Image (cartoon, rainbow, N blue to C red; front, side, top):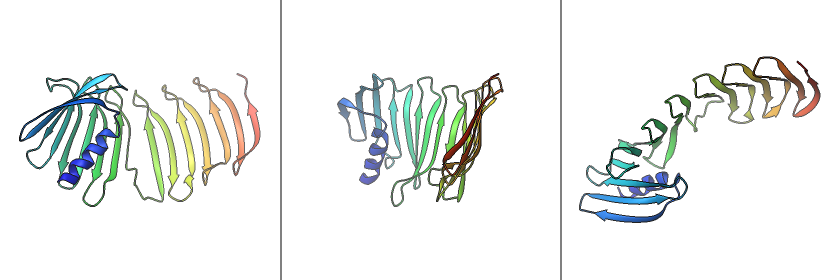
Amino acid sequence: MKNLLIIIILILTSTKVISQSKYLTSDTTKFRFEYDPISKDTIFTFIDYTDNFKTWNIYFDNNFSKLAYYSYLKKDTLFINEYYRNSVLKKQNIYLIKDVRKLIYASKFYSNGQIEYGENPNDTSTLLKIVRYHENGKTKWLSYYHNEYGGHGEWKLWYPNGQLELDAYLFKNEYDGQWTYYKPDGSVEKVEKWKAGKLLETIKHSN
C-alpha cells in the first residue's frame, strides 16, 4: 500500500511545483497546506489513511469546500480529477496500477464544462482517430495517427464559428496532396500542392 501512496504522490506532484509545506497529522489523517509558486495559490491537502488509501483530496481552501484535485481508487484503477476554481471538472486521468502505472484514459474540459478531448493515449489501434473541440462545442481538429508512420490521412482544422480552416492530407507523417487554407468567412486563402513532404506549388487567392 505504501507503493500506491508513492504512485499517487508522483502523479499529483508531476503537475505542480510545490515549495513551502507544513503538516498536521493524526493517527488516521494527514493535512498539509502548500504554496504553489506557479498558480500563486495556496492549496490544502487532506489524505485519508483509513480504508486503504482510497481517497486523496486537494482543496483550494482550508474549509475543504472547493476541490482542486480528487483521486480515488477502484480495485486496480486510479482516477484523478482536477477542477477549476468554479468547481467544473478540468481534467480526468485514469490509470491502471496493478503491475505498473499505465494511463488508459485522459480527458480535458473547458471551464464551461465543454470537453476539449477524451482519449486513450495507449490505444494500439493501427489508425487512431484524434478529435478536438472548441469551447463552444464545435469541432476544432480532426486527424489520424498511424501506430507505425505517425500522422497519416486527412487532417482538418475548423474555426470556432464552424468554418473549415484547413483541409489537408498526410502520408506517412509527411505533407502530401493538396492543402487548402480558408479564411474565417469561408473564402480560400491559398492552396498548396505537396508530394512526399516537398512543396511543389503555392496558389494564393486574393478575395
